[in-house]
Image (tube, rainbow, N blue to C red; front, side, top):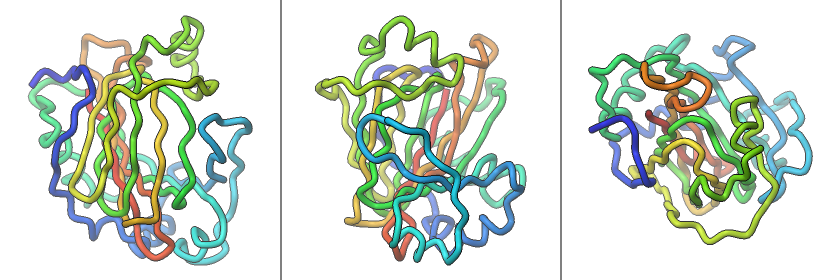
Length: 239
């Protein structure tokens, strides 16, 4: 399959959910280099009205998620936790990425969201692949035409988060374990995390030689929305 996808698509994956339990993520938080681990306050609504604040975990992650809305993420997993390299490769294959092409600047991240805390409206300059590995997240996408010209430009300078605008999603994906979706760069989206089940996300940033590394690449991350007792959702990105 050509690495560019349009429009967003859904597919299935076979990630091992044991890689995304809260106990496993607690261990990763202890192992991660300081620059690769982040714990911040969660978004409060569909529009981000204030920047997240860094916080310090004072108890196991399950207890922290039960008492306050958080967004936890771990970056570049295969660089320091090589057991996640196979998970990244599996998601790229499941998404149909042609890995015989040269890929640049791959990242693979785990993200954890408190149940019922949304991720505010934003767009990304990379293709994304989002994989459910427990719990439940619902992704709502709208086309790049919803962005104003200055918002397109801002994506190249870290301005992903957007003012809220009413729109009817053209594609929504209700991700449970084993479910996945992929979307091209610049598609507007927000997501909601649910207590209903546990889950996680895998994303990879991959840039082929035809694209500006700042714009049309792929970012890969493993993300999770959280039940206080278990890991919640996983997502992945591809070119």
